[in-house]
Image 1 (spheres, rainbow, N blue to C red):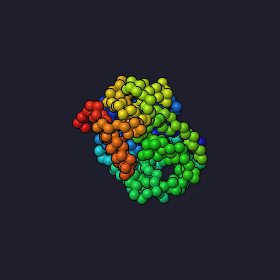
Image 2 (image 1 turned 30 degrees about the horizontal axis):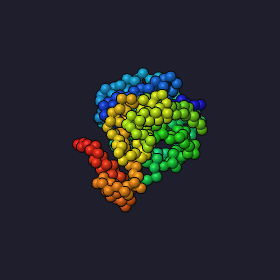
Image 3 (image 1 turned 90 degrees about the vertical axis):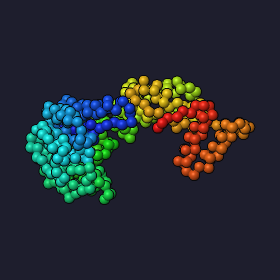
Image 4 (image 1 turned 180 degrees about the vertical axis):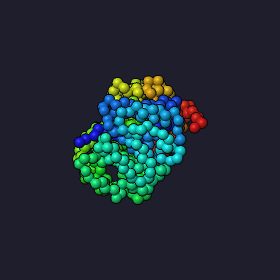
Length: 377
């Protein structure tokens, strides 16, 4: 006896993607479309039960159009859907979940663990709802299912595996997972995917978010799909996002012009991310050493790169290459400034102060060349 499931969480539909300029609105629509793509995969692969472990929506206050699009898509699903509201989309009187939903959808509404019998699937479905932005209770504590060979016990929940009593996102302990004797626990809240884990007889996992929303959510994103049975869990990760956030360090030590830097960045992104490299969002961190007379214009680089890539943000972490042997014989104002700044860098009290002093050296050198520009921000 087994059931085919899909497990996703933390879509955050309606989220405002900040920090990427006019591409934010595009990303907002793409995140919703990612959910629709998950439903399409579930249809094609004949999933029987889709588990959504919280934060389907980014907020309880979002556009009615987004909510209706989700409901319309679910109403056409040939499978059952279970939703455990999370800390971003808790079950409240004004939440989207308080309205009418398709009949194939089970939404947990109370902040205590409950069981819904899905007789046609031979599943006992367990879950609960966040009722606000925070929840200190561990709803899985003291829960132990009565094992049966004729039914599969599955729990869908939004919570944080934590040993801290101060955790405010439904802290769950591994020992509680083990004692529960569930066959599978579909977790949400942590945006980084975990492996399929096991505690005693219980399998559990975080699928991570299916679509990144910032440079703290890098790499491939998706969901889990496969089968669960008594004593067995055969779930595989499936990438679903159209594009990914990536952080890339690029050493430009041998570059002498901005065009060379641009070519180097594009060459490296293609080498690492393949033919679809143009689709991603990049935080490019420039490293290495540059001449005291060569200055990186970050805004110019970003403008050029954003004509080739979906989005690129550039951070200049290069250091100025100073020939200290030659510096000894130089006594012009610029050289005196360099000597004083090198001394300040050497005597920095900590790494933060050293970074500030290195940046001051770079800015001062630009000033000597008349290359410093004032920006209001």
